[in-house]
Length: 68
Length: 452
Image (tube, rainbow over all chains, first blue to last red; front, side, top):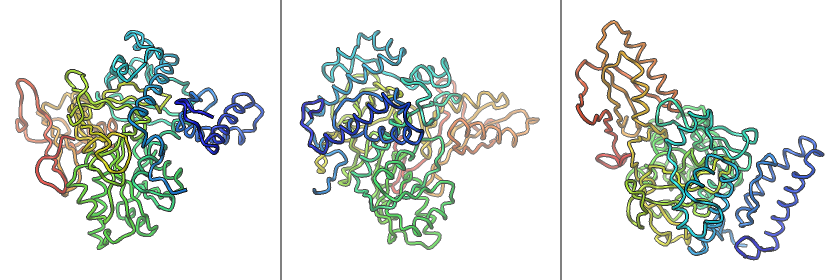
């Protein structure tokens, strides 16, 4: 996996970004299926993982529409 | 893997060319976001002929119009309570903070989301980690935890780091000192003035702080953290290293931090900000080593996009290579050196004389006034308002008390002493009035303090 400036991420970094992407996708598509404790904790985790993706120059955009 | 001395090793040590490329990309994203989400910003950008696609280099930054505090405040007056600057619906926000304004009536109000708050803490993490704070540390916050954003972000940063956080709100100075000792705090966060106040109180209590558990102090809220004489005094009294940081409510967090090499200034967090230094009169950029006004563009807070905000802070930028820590982030030598306007910083609170005057002028009984700033007990900034009341029938005590309360409410609770003085004892002015008398001294040094 390469970031926005063309650098190859390490396997561990790529896995973290993968976690972010998976969580963002889940919250975008299936948030309504989640109980309050599932949804709000997932949002909090997403807000933290966003910092990782951002720090790795992944340009994942904003996530206000997801509630974070 | 060896522990990194950097929070984000790749960004903090990347070449200046790579850093510039990163900033250009983030600037393009920021312009695109503001253009799409904030009609007010979109109009400003389009009027200047700026689109995201047109951002090709950092030179293009200069095509974006400056934004001033006055414009921000006017926007809030026109569209209360937040003005036309929000890029996301209010429902997405989880926190509200404010800072005192320039008119005395309207504070600057800001909102942030969950993600923004993680970012706010993230900026503090650069500073804490860079100054040597680690998960094993116990961090005491001598902070009141109110609407002033202050150390809120630092608190969350320390939780993120895994430190033991010791919140010290709503406590007397003596109680704070006792808790620092009882809990064996290794790091203390406070304003420089309050660090000295605690040291003074400890001395009065017969406590030897210099041989206590504290190894590091993280200072913020006042320029004194980078004034060598004051810093030296703090470090001697606490027997600890003191690191300066600086931030602002308009950004929600810090934009610079002093690293453990203590280069006599603070590194700018340049992977999250573009910091320009300009001639405040012409708006033209100044070279390294020349004083000027800092202008900030922030990539972090998406809720309120900040582009080319004129801070009125006086700074002097030098290359990051002047520090031996290995960071490529440029440095503000001497931290925030003062102001290019008349704002005064009193115990961490912004005070604009024109805002104080606007409030005083609502009291018709007051004929003349003076704003007096002085250093109390050798360490503490105090502000008092001296007033003349010609009408003997006016209840002076009641008026002083009411004015003091109104001024405090407009300044995040800052205590203003208000007292009457003899008629005709204050200076009168025919042309440019000078109703501010700043007699504060550099603590630990001698003579007039830098404008602050």
